[in-house]
Image (cartoon, rainbow, N blue to C red; front, side):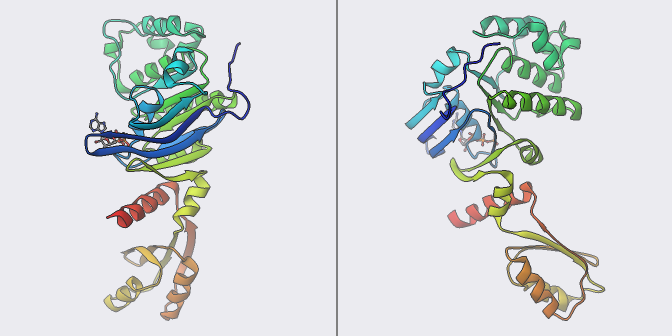
Length: 310
Ligand SMILES: Nc1ncnc2c1ncn2[C@@H]1O[C@H](COP(=O)(O)OP(=O)(O)OP(=O)(O)O)[C@@H](O)[C@H]1O
């Protein structure tokens, strides 16, 4: 097996001050980042944050208005022509009237460092449907075929836009197991997703985009810590209007939900909030304090940015 990996320490991808606008909309705004070989990186962001635009720039499908994009030290186009990049994008139909196997065979034939067609089919879990026409597939099966096309040859960087949309649980697990193998073999994997639990479980590093800017860059644990807030929940014997008002006035509160006897809140200083809670003369039972999940941290970070820039 031949692998052309980047020189040790060289980035797989380098964005330097990359900006891309469509008319008045600045989709990518002075973005600077490096991806290293062997890293699995999740790209997160609310709708319209610039994730797809970033991937398009990385793949040379769009040109930046300013700044530079380098892939293994060359232009995206050169890296792709050299067969170093495999991509699985959301858009673009598969060819009609060809079978799954014919399409995979074509992708292998076009790749400078192809895998065997039977191996590609097996890895993507589509051996059983190899003779079906690609326009007769379910959404999840189509995604598997896209995955097969992205892994038809030996790549050093794999780029995936919302790869598991429409896949069932088994397909998702198999998909991520294959991606982990790819990363362990030294490949860089970059995926955009709205499934935050996948990012939390799979990614070594998480990038949070917001209006084209990089809002956070770190491990999932670092992103959670950056959000700062913690969850507190407890039960109270009775909650009348006066007590509810006192709860709403607790210090450092960022969210409060009262349901029956149960109170759930988020605080940027849980110690101080709980101290003040005891100061109300109540006796909270089943008190739990926990860090935010990645999803809540993501919402907290992007909402704080929305409030700051409003
Ligand atoms: N071809 C285009 N013409 C005009 N505006 C565009 C074009 N493509 C994207 N945009 C705008 O650029 C911004 C970034 O879009 P992009 O698709 O990169 O975001 P995204 O993070 O991938 O969103 P989503 O999560 O909804 O897929 C959005 O405001 C979008 O409306």
